[in-house]
Amino acid sequence: MIVEAVARIVLNTFGSFGDLHPYLAIAIELRRRDHDPVIATSEVYRAKIQAEGIGFSPVRPDVGELLERPDIIEKVWHPLRGPEYLIRDYLMPRVEQAYEDLSAGCAGADLLLTHPAAYAGPTVAEVLKLPWISVVPQPSIFLSADDPPVLPPAWLRHVYRLGRGARVALFAMGKARVRRWGEPLLRLRKRLGLSTAENPIFEGSFSPCRTLALFSRQFASPQPDWPKNVLITGFVFYDRRGEGFARYSPHTDEQVTAELARFLDTGPPPVVFTLGSSAVMHPGTFYRESLKLALKLRVRAVLLAGAKERAQLPNELPQSVFVADYAPYSKVLPRAALTVHQGGIGTTAQALRAGRPMLVVPWSHDQPDNAERLKRLGVARWVNRNQYTAEKVIGVMRELLDNSCYAERAAELSERIRAEDGLQTACNAIEAALKGENTI
Image (cartoon, rainbow, N blue to C red; front, top):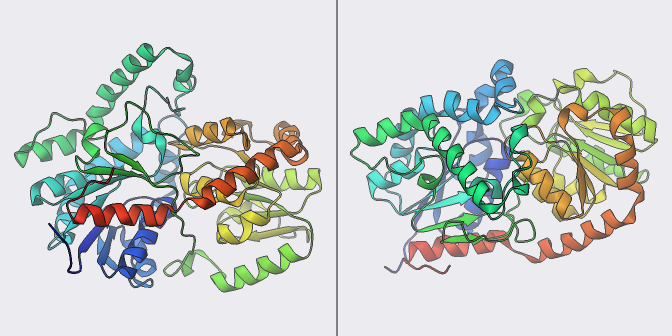
């Protein structure tokens, strides 16, 4: 099949900015290539997506409701039970809604891109006989016994110390347990006359056509037990907040960027403290302890804290501290002395590209694994969330700031990551799939 006409490509995702932004970047590039991309995701992102000239199709559940529900946010970000709550109690009970919405959004589509947390995608593709590509933003999704991830439950954090056979057995038991979380999707597939043999949360989420791993080979390399059709593209970047979030912020993006630039120009590189776009909704004492750290170390600081999270901070702050609810990472992280962050994959990618050392304080989900990978790369240290106090981590911070090895290694990795072109690689693979080609 040779595709010459414009292709309608639906990109289905769910989650925070870290889950949306790579899809938005890909959609913008696909539009530049004269295709008709449509992002199918939460209603809260409609204005942001449409402001970029990209088509939008709403798919439930709307992650925007989490911004108004601290009770749900607390459960989602529980350090041990967060993944279980998100999948079993939040997403799966709504999977039939997602299936209905995405089926409507895929009418007339030529190709579907899915997301690991958008569980209806593979079923929609199978029912509509629609070619599809699975997308994996972070390596922990593969649950590889050859490159074992660091997982949130404390008893799994050192699984990589086990022999491979023990890891295979342990992961098999874990997958069997997690499969039960997907019962609503399995019931839906059975009613639709589809196979229920594969685990819908693991093997069933990978396309038989191809899987795009949207991270760098510097961050994770291919493994023998990954699906055979995985293409590592490199990171895909986008960091504009855009339209639709004025009610969460007292300042426009332009105002913040201008004020931040003035702050950065008036002194030495600051330490940047951020919790990304998701963990920031459940910060605990992070910003209060971060301010203490900056004052104890006598360093300038940028705190990227949402309007609600600013309640942790005093009304009067020294001139050495700049606070904003959002700022493009590409504008601030390269000018930082050090970045302290939660380890989400979007923040991790931007911090690696910036080429500065990091202290990672993971909350849950993929963040402990991302943190451990950064540590192994020699660009970061990481501490448990409950250990993040000024008194306990000030020594680690001093080491990261004073030991030039971290900065040198971070700069070296930054050069390699900047040499990759994840966006073009991903879009080339998408166009190859439209033509019926397999370039992997």
